[in-house]
Length: 122
View 1 (cartoon, rainbow, N blue to C red):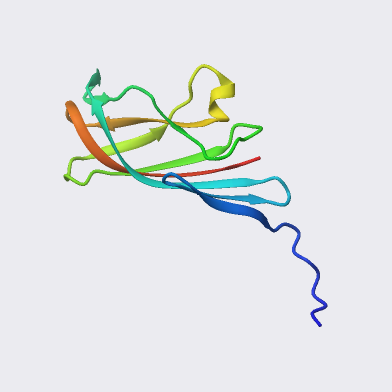
View 2: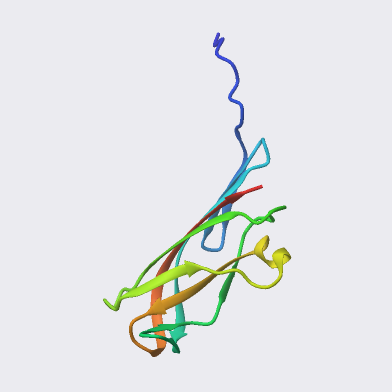
């Protein structure tokens, strides 16, 4: 017999959807992890850097508020590149999609990057 109190929150659902893994907690919190490769172009100039258009990536769960999002990126071809979270004009879209832009030191019409996203919210 275990007399310890039940945890305040526990996982009620977890799974995968495409490249995403996700968990839904009993208190309503939702977490998603993504690890995948994406091909894109980085050619819009801004000072000494170049950036991509905003890239949406649909979440596997629906958030009721805009989640906190962390984006990581790695270029397998050894080109310096950064991934930054981006926000579209519509707040409703940020509850359905992770948005990011890519920034590099050189212009390119096609680069493949490994992306990592963590999103957490309700």
